[in-house]
Image (tube, rainbow, N blue to C red; front, side, top):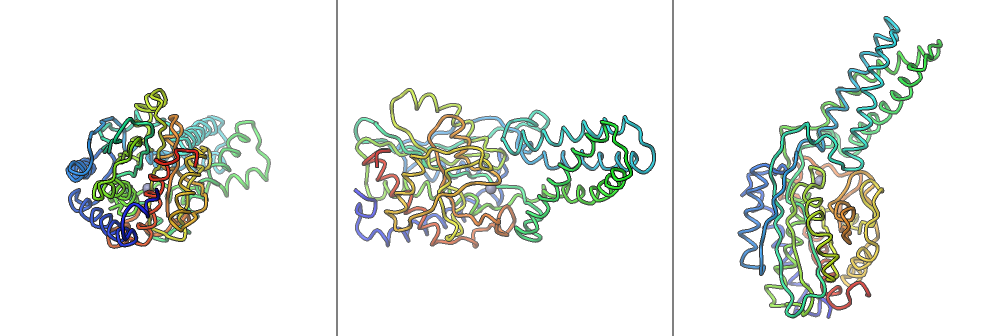
Length: 419
Ligand SMILES: [Zn+2]
């Protein structure tokens, strides 16, 4: 059976669930008191609200607590900015005042630390800098609707409840300014690496001296910009990113409950995931706890993460993630594509080319996962800024997302991954 055949006036119902998602987003922001940094009291308040709200709807609502270092993930930006600023100052002394080799050696060490931070913490989402930052406790909220008979399949929907600290340049100048600043930062880092290696090797020609002097001077204002990249005084509301994903996932469970639909052999799980903005820590914890258990149980299990249902024209299914370095599960992504076709959308595959979704952490942890998202990749001005509020939602996109998730649930129940 298709989701659209499971009830009368399905289209009317979709509108109702888009309203439901929008209402719950506004309520959660109100209850939490605005932005929800990973592991902070505001995120706990939001998770407690989800528990309270879903307890009458799901068969079981449980939490899984874990520890994390919330500021480590984006803290690398500050560390890199400071390391590179010191490097530039040392190079100014080296190229303008006294070519002492020790200055170059210290610069090289600082540059290597900067490269390691960007690769380890940001590009590959390793817990590289975590011990340097304060620890907090966070929790995932897991809501389950059991199968009528024996459980042979399990479909997991998830969205992340936490929100990001503001990205200053997206707010000030939109995606173009953001990408320009990021590009300047990366170019400075690469050129710096080349210059300090050549200087350490003893190169000191006239041309090298000129280039080194120009580079050292340019790097100072560039690194001051990088140091102010994050606005740690504002945690954004995150209405689209990603309460839209949380409540689109919860809407599936709500729909099944409201219409008294219970699959014969498929268990449905909706998760309000914590700490995505802190480096996918909630999804990492979930995969660590359950990947083996799910694989050993013989219950065919797939995960569909939903992130930022906002920009209709950019809606797509991620089959690659983590800046293109992680392949998501092709069969699960294919199922969502087929579901989108059934929902009348026929969504394209897409790729997270800068950053990551929870699906990457689940896939790396050994689970079958993909991600449904509708986010302008430029990115849009609301992305990680104070403009991501409950009055900046797009119900058409939310309805399309819920429609796709519902069709995916029904399709998976009927055919598994042999669709
Ligand atoms: Zn985000």
